[in-house]
Image (cartoon, rainbow, N blue to C red):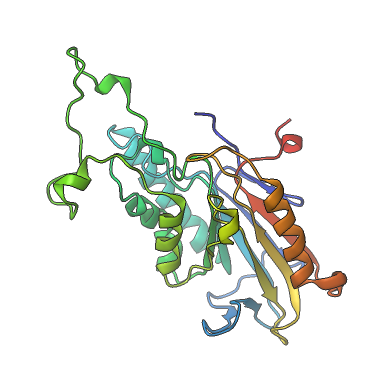
Length: 283
């Protein structure tokens, strides 16, 4: 399967695991205690992130973590342990206000159970455990169909049974189904997590699910944006890698809806995130 390299488009180069940016301040390295932003209540029509007075808004990006990759090997689980360790170090050192998981959170084509949300929850746990809000966008591996490794097949052509341990909560019928977990199910699980700002995008764009926008508001007025964060599902996995014309039209209309006639001239940052690069960025 072709692997997409993630890009945070328009403004930023992106490191393999994480990259940091700030909004609303040139003071990139000023230390701020956790909780320096204020989250508008869940009862708001749209949940906005709101900056704290006198503080920059720092975002950390984690991309291509690939949890669950080669889970039947020795090195696969160790890779997940090392990724968790690095994320813990980054979050403790940088104390970001917000985290973006920029696709390929896990390698679903290597995961042998239907409920891949176990790996998803493991990947976001460093952020969730610190009470830092986050959002996610899907990549081309997050809901990829399971791929049978050729080495699993014995000489008679019968694959050995490699299912979850009997201690798991799955029924015998589910344990060996290898159905995978689709984008909609993954997003439902993601939204259940307290602290997640991820959104099930417009139904008319499905199976492209993670299409949405978030607003970062100024500290003195929750109606006054200082940044818009756009998330686009670039496909792959269960369907082709593509940003469709329908998605492009949704983006155009969404941008006009939340910033009509570009009335918010003071909005200093507009960022688009997706997993697979455009043709222009891949060359």
